[in-house]
Amino acid sequence: MEAILFAAVLLLASHVILVAAAGPSVIVVGAGFSGISAAKTLSDAGITNIVILEATNRVGGRICKVQFAGINVEKGANWVEGVNGDEVNPIWTFSNQLGLRKFRSDYGNLSSNTYKEEGGLYGVAEIQKVIDTAGEVYDAGEKYSNSLSSSGSGDISILASQRLQNHVPSSPAEMVVDYYNFDYEFAEPPRVTSLQNTVPLPTFANFGEDVYFVADQRGYETVVHNVANQFLKTSKDGTIVDPRLILNKVVRVIEHSPRGVTVKTEDGSVYKADYVIVSVSLGVLQSKLIEFVPKLPEWKILAIYEFDMAIYTKIFIKFPYSFWPTGNGTQFFLYASERRGYYSVWQHFESEYPGAHVLLVTVTDDESRRIEQQPDSTTKAESMEVLRAMFGKNIPEATDIFVPRWWSDRFYKGTFSNWPIGVNRYEYDQIRAPVGRIYFTGEHTSEHYNGYVHGAYLAGIDSANILIRCIKTGDCKYIVKAKDADD
Image (cartoon, rainbow, N blue to C red; front, side):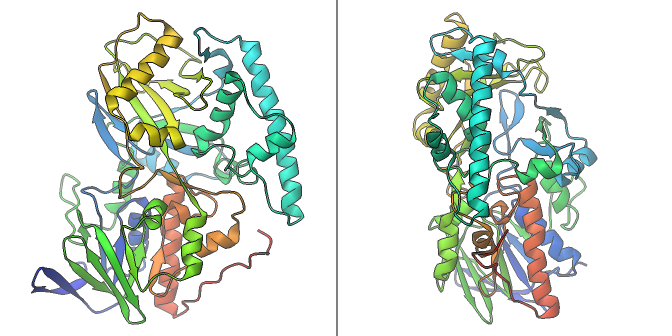
């Protein structure tokens, strides 16, 4: 029988005090991909006295399927990003092993699929000129940014670079191309996005430039369950029944000392162990959901707040029938509004969900916050107005809409972390660095792959290995790279 973290259970008042068994014990806070990956890495190293406390009723974190319009769609992460390169993305390997349905996303025909605010398509040559000019401006800015970085002068934002070249996007066409180039990937506008940390992104430089949309009715979360099932007990139908995974446990307090850690949950339960790995999102760390006692040191708090938690909202809309163009080169289309980022990037699912008659529109940042705070009926009316501008007034009324609310959810407070201007390897070392017996993981602790599914998975392995080294060798020092050192 596999060793269980806690050998005895004592009931005292409303608390459950769990007493650790022999051997090192570890509490993992969060059952997203990083938490599951970290726990499996510990288990593989022989550290099986583990308990995983998850605030929600499921495993997977921000990889989450939901039922909508008779099909399962992805509320959060949706793409395997970085495919067909020199290195193999581990998530691509998992998805192939599991036989997940996935489709290569082809964004190459946007110049033929950009709609005017007043209706009708832009000419291909007109939009292609905008796209080419944006590329030239970016390339010049990247050279300037690299010169700043190599001279130790820091970095600048994309917007600052555009201003230096007297080419800040201002027309609807320029703004929608700019939005697609940056916000659609980073979920934040150019004013806060660092030039130095955009292209080439390590994800695409290392793993390849292709991206694949996961459209499997089992859900993208299957990759997380696959990892979990390799070390947690499951029933015949694949349901996790291991007592070391405890759902609906909202961690509110983490007490730590040189002797160990005590984790208190919202329902009054108390868990004690030698170490804790905190795998909650950056947004949760920046909120007041979890109190650390004593408080985290100032350097750690500063590192946490130096990073951004972005908001990327995928809105699914159902119709009685399809009325948009289909066929090769039509899947992605843009709406050029005078209001930057206003229902700008659209996608249909002719191949992914045939016969579903569903569209996806992506909004980010301030538009995400605005939309989260209004009724879905208002969002539906706004999106219908945009669609009628593109396709005419005779299109059918939408029959259903799904609007995720990641920013409003206290267990996430956003979708993924971003590397803002001025942040470098030093800050990344600090955000990942342990504080005594508290270890940290999550996609935000991945230096090269923050914001991506593979970043979450690999970060869990990296953080667990730091703890394993401490437990097995006694070497618990974590070296933070000097701030002025070269990357």
